[in-house]
Amino acid sequence: THEKMSNIRDSRVQGTRNLAAALVQSEAKPRVFICASAIGFYGNRGDEILGEKSPMGRGFLPEVCGEWEDATRTAVTAGIRTVNIRIGLVLSPQGGALGSMLTPFKLGLGGRVGSGQQWWSWIHIDDIIGAIHHAIRTESLTGPVNLVGPNAVRNVEFTKVLASILKRPAIFPVPAFALRLAFGEQAADEMLLASLRVQPGKLGSSGYAFRFPALRPALENLVR
Image 1 (spheres, rainbow, N blue to C red):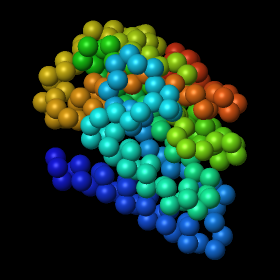
Image 2 (image 1 turned 90 degrees about the vertical axis):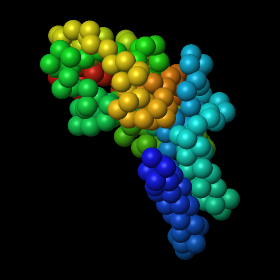
Image 3 (image 1 turned 90 degrees about the horizontal axis):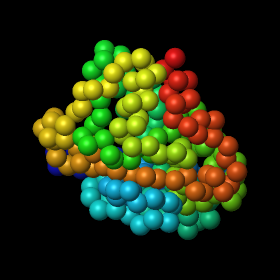
């Protein structure tokens, strides 16, 4: 709804703007400011390979992420090293996409989402923590940094790997029209059905070593 969209935008943008202003005014300014946004910045881009220099996409989520990152400029201007981490699909059995998928997949009711051809840029939760720690310690990192694993996969591959680990079939697809009815057209198209093939260019070039660069070992670690 419009009210929900307004609350999402204000909580991210205004909160970050206030925090950046407070950091600038403090007597002991921090050496680094880590601000989290999301790969939603890029929008639905099909098979295009996306890096930190790729332009912002079009739609509600890209606009929110763009304004969210712009809200840190006060800190940047004041000389505080600022890193805008763009977080991908975080894998954890405790919540998020994987957490909500586990029950239906364990019951043998899982399957691809929509066409299944959309790219999912995922990252193991241990690598989220490791990458943030790396960003804090690595003086050369500034600006946008993609927090995704190095091997994005299509949704259909993701669901097949998860089902095989759980020793269940993946034969019950969730059609796009059902997602739009359940979540609204904009939410479904910009989140569940969007295709984002994102690469962690800056993480790799700055020396970060992924704990879980491949999907199957990552899911085995989390599920088993």
